[in-house]
Amino acid sequence: AQSVTQPDIHITVSEGASLELRCNYSYGATPYLFWYVQSPGQGLQLLLKYFSGDTLVQGIKGFEAEFKRSQSSFNLRKPSVHWSDAAEYFCAVGAVTNAGKSTFGDGTTLTVKP
Amino acid sequence: DVKVTQSSRYLVKRTGEKVFLECVQDMDHENMFWYRQDPGLGLRLIYFSYDVKMKEKGDIPEGYSVSREKKERFSLILESASTNQTSMYLCASSFMAYEQYFGPGTRLTVT
Image 1 (cartoon, each protein chain N blue to C red):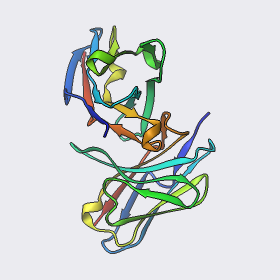
Image 2 (image 1 turned 30 degrees about the vertical axis):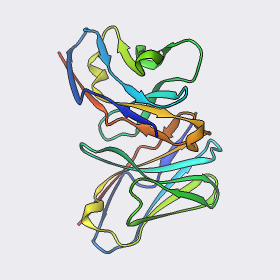
Image 3 (image 1 turned 120 degrees about the vertical axis):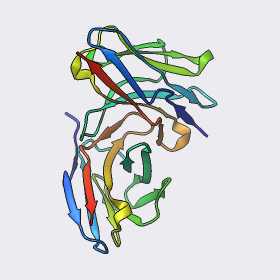
Image 4 (image 1 turned 90 degrees about the vertical axis):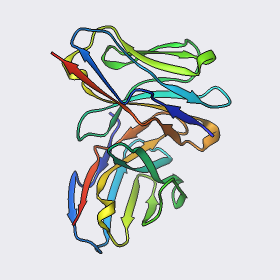
């Protein structure tokens, strides 16, 4: 069975500082990996995805993530956080063998200090 | 642009009422999902459909049913609403195991 762990429930960073949100997954083969963002009262929006190939993937809004197979991790990064990045972030893992379903982490809430 | 729409953003119902939540996608995706989201519990899958008239129970199907008569539409039904079904309900669709596209959510309050 696949699983996703986001170790940090809540992270606070200052505007302009760098950000790293952690994600660890458990899956036997190469997974499909995703990061989604959810603003308050809204649905989830895809930030970026990894299926295969280059392990550093670029997404929208200046985010990037790196797939590290040896560490079973897919951490999300941004070099300089903006106040509008305050939201909840979800990491997810999917697989063709799981009939199209994804497993989501519990989310990390990001607060941005002025 | 890809779109998933949900019939209501906010809904207030009384205990015991039958509640229909509808979701429509315009991407010709075969997979559609219903989740509920509660503080501290993340996203929990209620039901999943991988084709018209095909459905599969998710992690928390009790008290819910679903209907998928057309490919683009996936309905969630609360047969007899209860206060513990007060929640945010999110619909999503996907092509195979690729990324899911989410609707804006329906915040349901059962009083």
